[in-house]
Length: 527
Image 1 (cartoon, rainbow, N blue to C red):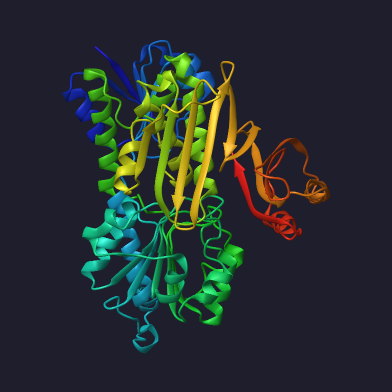
Image 2: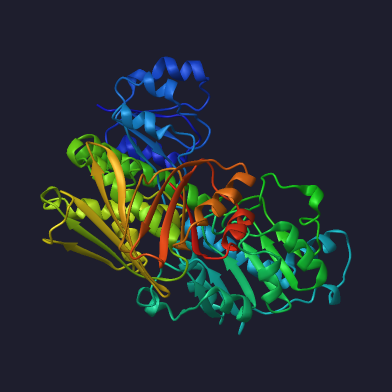
């Protein structure tokens, strides 16, 4: 009989489900670190939330462990790499809080528009001030959703019942994928220009950090309402406070903050038009029950038939068993990451082409590796070999697979393309030796560089002194060049330069390089 330990507070339905399936379950949430280390060798599965730190030391003591389950989306408290090396499957429960987060978004939207918390406080103070708390309806208003993943879609469905018009910006969702939702897909500028209420539902990354700042708020309608139940840092809190004081923003509903607990000295939370909660998006009885039952179901199915639903590291486990393909899987994944970071506007299509006998029976696996890399840069949730194709299909991403018989100077070559509204990028890569990844062509420019670390890509007029000018700007910012590759099609035309640097450049350095006469199309990629 499999032994399962639940070491964090998880809804009792988890224990009930596992026991009813015939497993031996221990529920003990008060282990010290040493106590847990002393008993962990006896268990086949461990279920945690966020309190138990499943670090390398604890994993090393796991002698019988087969699966570690997280009753929630994140796995920050689990050393996934150590678990993978030990051959232990790690799984989580993505999507369990979707409805809760969507409902919380709607709740903040209503509360901010109708000034419900402020009126409640006033009445508790024995005041009767009806005129002061006059609000506005959602009916007939335009809701601008930035990000249309699972939570964004659920918000849209609920907002439609209030009679709201929905417009959305999501660069990796196609119009066909949302045709049945009666939602208009627009560019970001249309969101700022037309939305009465703006709600964000994106991950926090370099592209979304301070996505809503002074510049964007200045383009919005006067009286716009800002809602953020996604990630702190997407909204610039200082700029939001200024916009509230100036009257540009009439109200804000915030569940997440740039630092948590937030900086109370800023004054944003105390502003009379701000409705805020302490990161409660997933804090409902139903959400906690869902993730508890979901992780129990996933573990039962895994032990009974080997299905790895919700697996975080299934891809890594596959790679370990296929040494010949391991480097090319990594290459395809890296190319996906590059394509995502190169993309500047809406995605139309991805293409992956294979040239070489090695790929004849592994097309789907390598295509999934490309999607895994691409989506990991676009989404906040875990993306792996199990869910990447499903996520791509849900978003309406078109992936074209081509097995080529064209002659190539490389024995095995993977070519990837991204088509966006503004044009196409193409990267070709191969593997030198057993594991040396190389990009050997970009947009028909012959190059050769390692796709790792921080990579600066730009076009420049093919004339003397261009590299020296760029090097000077990098030197002024104390950024060291590790290696570089130059590619050109014809003498005197624009050339392509790829520079591996020791640290990423910020916007100031990027702008200074862009300002050099003869430089254009500058990109920063981090792998």
